[in-house]
Amino acid sequence: MEIFAIVLNEKDNVAVVPRAVAKGSVVTAAGLELEAAEDIPVGHKIAIAAIPSGSMVVKYGTAIGQAECDILPGQWVHTHNVKDITEQLCNEYAAAYRKRAKEMAKDA
Image (cartoon, rainbow, N blue to C red; front, side, top):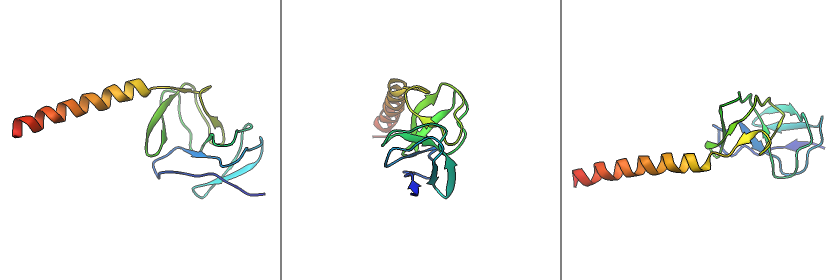
């Protein structure tokens, strides 16, 4: 049975598996064939590229977390190897928004 994972954006380094994947199964994503390095639960992410420790995990074309260790293609990507940086990202986005709002107010 073929397993196709869903890549949501061409910038992504992960794909979503639409059903549970057993270790050793071949998963196809973005034209790549990956061997699942471990069991991956339905709806979770599989790495489609190497993600070095400290690098951003990218889904939807945007960073969703930071790798806490080296993640190899075919590995399960979840909270056990990804640091949640939601608060940090929100603060960065808010700061950029406030800066842009100030610039726009000056131009008005």
